[in-house]
Amino acid sequence: MNLKKTIAAGLPALLVGAVAVAAAQPNFVFILVDDLGIHDIGAEGSTFYETPHIDGLVKSGMRFENGYAACQVCSPSRASIMLGTAPPRHGITQYIGDKSGLAYNRGDPVMPAEYLHNLPADQTTLAEALRAGGYTTFFAGKWHLGDEGSWPEDHGFDINKGGWSKGSPNGGYFAPWKNPKLENGPDGESLTLRLAHETASFIEASQDKPFLAYLSFYAVHGPIQTTEALCDKYKKKAKKMGLVDNGPRFKFDRRLPVRQVQDNPIYAGMMETLDDAVGIVLDTLKKTGLDKNTVVIFTGDNGGVSSGDAFATSLLPFRGGKGRQWEGGIREPYYIRVPGMTKPGSITQVPAIGMDFFPTMLELAGLPPMPQQHVDGVSLVPVLKGGTLPDRDLFWHYPHYGNQGGEPSSIIRSKDWKLIFYHEDGRYELYNLADDIGEQSDLAAQHPEKVAELKKRLDAWLADTGAVMPERDPRFTQAKFDAKLESARTKKQDSLEKQHARYLEPGWKPNANWWGSSAQD
Image 1: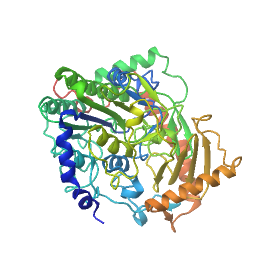
Image 2: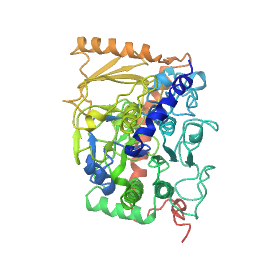
Image 3: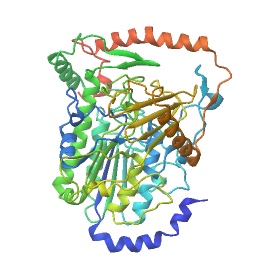
Image 4: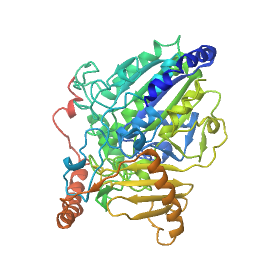
């Protein structure tokens, strides 16, 4: 069934309804940060990174303490926000570009499942739904939901500044950035700030019609890059906080070393620039008076990079990070501010996930729900008004290996219980998050009845969504696998300790012009 055609049949009525509610329709600013960790924000407990503008947003709206991404890596989560469906249902279960099946050959026990490499064209996106309801739609930043023909302008966005196939900034974070959808600024211009200014300019020009401004930062995805001034600032801060030469930075956990402390001056500089960029957009809303009728949403697409890639941050007390099956990989900053509705500084314990944005935004816009499309999401409006929602289970399915040490797994969270199923060997882990937020005490052996209960519900969900499973790799040899793990446990960890200690040494610099940031000097 072509869901887009089915839904399109009802769009004329939707448009009639849109005319009736146009006067009350709010604008939307949706801010999505790449690879943002739950503990990377001051309001979430970070004392090293400085995020005053984001903290101010938290104080002015509602913070979801149990907010989640739909997946532990980017493309699946991004697709789930756009479609309101879970990754196994829409079919993008891995970051687009990774290998699967027999093409994947890294010596692991199973072959990752096949997956879609483009956002399904027969589905109705959030942008298309809002545009049909009278909204002008704008996109800036990272897309990573398909090749040309499946870019933002092909899925409901009137304007696209910087969204294309790549999942990381092709030319780095300072111009020239080698992006076919974003004109280069002067050499050394910050990509993060440029995207904020593009968004601010759109907002200033869009005061006579409701709009969706979807600002999807490439930051803080690798490569981690900052200016010399910001790096020096956070070197001094690390020293003042007693973080220099303060013991090992990494601890081995399952497959790779994991960062245990926030003291990376490069990443801290990126976080400050990100916060400045958010401030540019929020200040523009206030300056134009549009803050009084603009819903602001802020979240991330997956956990922070505590392991793998740049090993940039620590998410303690949460275990793991991007690509991993524990809370550090999926729990996210999740903030919503609705003028006249959300109580400033309010906090809710109601669990929420990426698929919930679609139906929530439709209801806030006064537009009819599209239950055939956003089948895996629920509207959070009752929560935003100070109420609650009926209890529900949350699910994840990631039949792949993360570059950060994640294992193929499926997950159910039911109230305080969390069950993880591992596809490599069929084992289960059971945690009670209320008592063990760090997921250190596996209770599966003590509570077999709870394992059986949650397994039944997880299996039913996997069947309902048509989840594709990984398969045993006939090339697998245990000896080679064990040798790979031992190398990560010893050589990799030792190398990381030395590399990250150097970042804090006086006089350290990455190259002559600081990744191009000083090119204008």
